[in-house]
Length: 459
Image 1: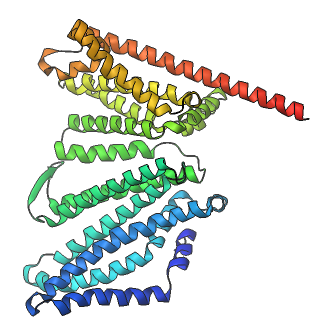
Image 2: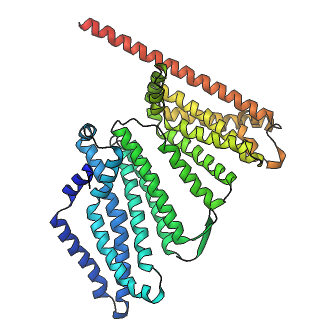
Image 3: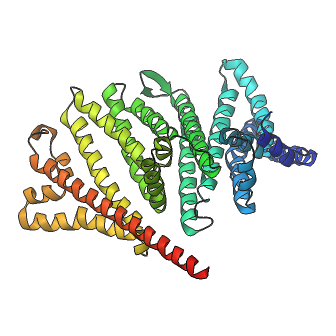
C-alpha cells in the first residue's frame, strides 16, 4: 500500500457506485440459472455460470482495464510526469496491474465465492479441492493475461497508433488467446489424468496448467519491467531478456526430457528463435541503438554501451554459449555442431539486417529490401546453382543443407565445404555491415556540417 501508483489507481477506480453496480450485475447474472433451470440442475448450472463469469472477469475484463491504464498514459501524454516522479518501473508495473483492474477483481471475488459455495458439498463428500482448483487457475491465468495486455499497450509507444503498432498489438493478443486456450484446456479436460513427466515430476493436466500460468506471469512481468525501464528512461543492463529465454527453454526442455543435453538444446533453440524475432521486430531502432552503443564504446563507457546494445546480440551470445557447451559434451554431432552452424547462419542474417537498418534512409522500405535480398541469397540462387552444378555447388551457398543429411553420414571434419562457405558468408556479411556503418556515419557528419553552415548563414 506504500506504492504511489497503486494508491492513485485505487483512488481512480474504487468508488461506492462501482461496488453497488458490481453486486447488482453479479446478482442478476447468477439469478438466471436459478430461475431458468430445473430444480435438479440449478446448483450445477449456477456453478457453470459462476465459473464462466470468473474467467471472463479475470481474463477478459481485467485485461482490458490493465491495458487501458497504459494506453491512457500514451493518449494523454503523461509519461513526462511519470519520469519526474520517484517511482521505479517495478513499482509502477505492480501498481497498474493490481490497481487498474480493481473492478474486475471485485467481480472475480463475487463469482469465486459462489463457485466455492457450490463446490463445498462435493468437497465434503469426496475430499477433493474441486472449488479451489477451479478458482486458482482462473486467478493465475487472469493475472498473466493482464500482464501481457499491458505489454501489448506498451508496444505501441514507439510507433504511436500506426499500422505497425496495431499489428504488434494484434500479434500479442493472438498469443494471449493461445495461452488462455492452453490454460483452460489443461485445467478442465481431465484434472487427474497423467499428462506428462516434467523434469522427473509426474504431473497431471491441472499441474501443467499451473506451471504454464506461472511461466506466463513471470515472462510477462519481466517484459513489462523491461519496457517500462525504456519508457521511463531508466538505464538497466539487459539481464531480463536472457533470463526469460532461459525460463522458457527450461519449461520446454522439462516436457521433452530431463537431461543436460536436452536443456542446452532447447535453450539454444529458444534463444535463436527469439534473436531472429527481436531483430526483425526492432529493425527500425537498430540504427539509433548501434550509434549510441558505438559512441559509448568510443568514450570508454562500457556499461552504458551494454545498456544501449540491441537485444538480439545478447540472446545470440546465449545460444552460442549453449552450442559451444554441447560441442564439448559427448553427444551426437547434430546436437552441438549443428547448433553452432545455426548460430553462425543467424549471425550472417543479422549482420545483413543490421546493414539495411543502418542505411534505412536510402530505402523506402528497408525491411522489404532485406527480405528480397535474403530470399535471393537463401532460396533463388541456391536453386539455380543446384540445377547447374548439383549438390556440391549448392552446399557452398546453403551450408545448413548438411543438417538435412543423416547424422551418421557426416561429422564436423567431413564437410569442409560447408564450414568454409559459412566463413566466407560471415566475412561478406561483416564487410557489408561495416560499410553500412561507415556510410551511415559519413551521412550523419555531412548532415551535421550542412546544419552548422546553415546556422552560420542565419547568424
